[in-house]
Length: 305
Image 1: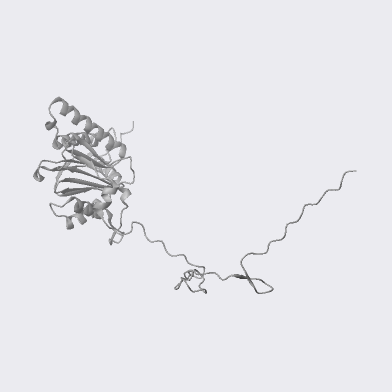
Image 2 (image 1 turned 90 degrees about the horizontal axis):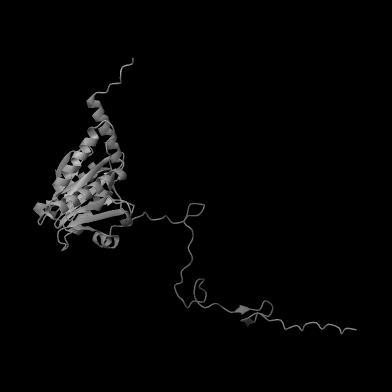
């Protein structure tokens, strides 16, 4: 009888954690920034249909990174839980802390169980209050740990590089435009293999931006910022794509360009100006139209005999 294969609990948890972290790191980062009027979420997401940032309830928003099918199941479960609690008790009983605790229990149970793989997701749960002091931002990891964040938070992708950029430049009480510019610049900041920093301009169409805005008069404070408004908030950022090089000939030099007219009235100009009349090839006299041959009468058929 063969002995069963044994793996220590420490090694098993380490392998599961490494598996989840690698899956999360393959995604693009999500940035959450607290500004003067609420909480801002920015993510690089080329898809216009699969959202990373969504609404959960009146004052609660949800953001995630990782495997889409897994965090989408968590989002739907959170919406159902919030709706049921708000319907059975009161809308004020639906809180971000209660939702974060429910997510933490679910993620922790899945991670510690040996029957299925851990979820490759990280989550943000944010809630805004009537004042800045009442805003809450929670970050949940793949193993169910909950962290209460303040000011800003980053998850997924090159989270360490983006967080370092934000830490050096973030200030409390930013306006919405300043917070959007800071978050987008942080997402575009990256490092190469040598550790040298380099910035890139992310196209507006590849950005997903949403806010929890306490200044809205509607009970629902969640709002998406569409590209036209996002372009006004970002302002001039430089070219989104590198300039195309000028065409070159086979010898490596630039192709010659057509001469440009300095004086439109110059008849010798090769680009613009009056064109001299045509001359007859034999007499040399000018003419404006080629000669036309006289009409030829059609042949008459002989009378039939």
